[in-house]
Image 1 (cartoon, helix red, strand yellow):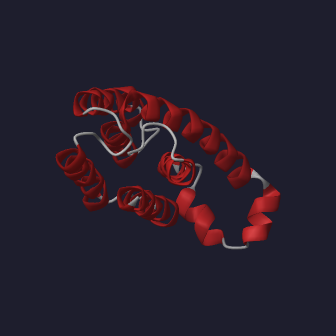
Image 2 (spheres, helix red, strand yellow):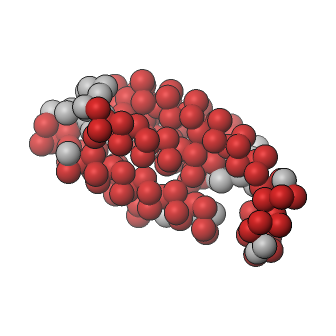
Image 3 (cartoon, helix red, strand yellow):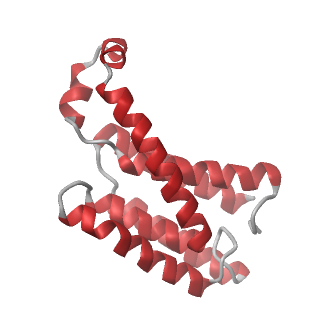
Amino acid sequence: MIAQLAVIVWAGGLAYEDWRWRRLPNALLAAGAALGLAHWAAYGAMPFGAPMSEGAVAAALGLVALLPFYRAGWMGAGDVKLSAVIGWLGGMQVLLAVFFAACIAAGVFAVLLLSPTCRRFMGDRSLERRLGRRVPFGVGLAVAVMVLAAGGLVQGGFRFW
């Protein structure tokens, strides 16, 4: 239960940083990787229940899957590294679920950020200047991790301790 809360707090910090500053600090990303390693050392499995070998493969897949988007300039390096850490923490099942949820969240963010109603409601042009036309994909990734971790906390679900 403590590790679940740690994952939720960690992902919440990343979501805040990406939304507010459009950055995913390397220190927070490294803390997530260290959390996974510490959990594996203590319990013999990664935080979402996958074996370490599956976490390593999912981390590599998360990196490779988003690297072309970074190279094209459509995504920041922090988003790519975050997907690798999520794969490390959760394995293939969690990585795919988080990618799916983050893509849906990114679409919702894009619609909201482009809508005149949302811009009037927010009334703060600094957000518009900060974001430009970029959608904070890391927020979607982090929120999806928070939801999955909270689901495990509440329901005792999916291979979570």
